[in-house]
Amino acid sequence: MISTSDFRTGLTIELDGEVYTIVDFQHVKPGKGAAFVRTKLKNLKTGATTERTFRAGEKMERAILDRREMQYLYNAGDEYHLMDTETYEQLALTAEQLGDGVKYLKENMNLHVLFYQGQIIGVELPYFVELEVVATEPGIKGDTASGGSKPATMETGLVVQVPFFINVGDVLRVDTRTGEYIERV
Image (cartoon, rainbow, N blue to C red):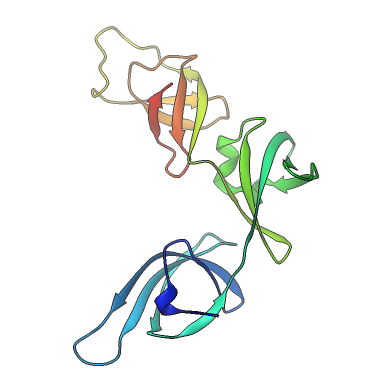
């Protein structure tokens, strides 16, 4: 059991039979009345965020997640095959379980799979991945880094807005949390 005074960003809790992670929280002590904690919670199964208010000192169950490092091997249709890096067991996940992570997967990439009570509830990708540009309009002489952007299709099928000077064959670092271009590698 944990109390609202133990809240911190990233903590996982069990609430109403669901597993949530704390995205943001704020302790509020009004001039009149009892203190309370305003939180923003993300459901780890559905990905939906919700806001909830707790009384100060309220107790709830802490959700203990098992985080295993796995390596992406290949995909066959709608199944994506991963291998546990410690036990070498293979596991097949659906595109629905991976969510938006499908757009960033490259063979032999390491990621973390989250388990709760033996069930897969999510996948954590590395914050940045390096992907090669396979299709974009050619750059023109005089294009600058701050002059605008154009769409570029990466090797995984992801489309990213990039500066005009990026060409086919360039390797780019992309943020997996926002899907934005960071830099050319």
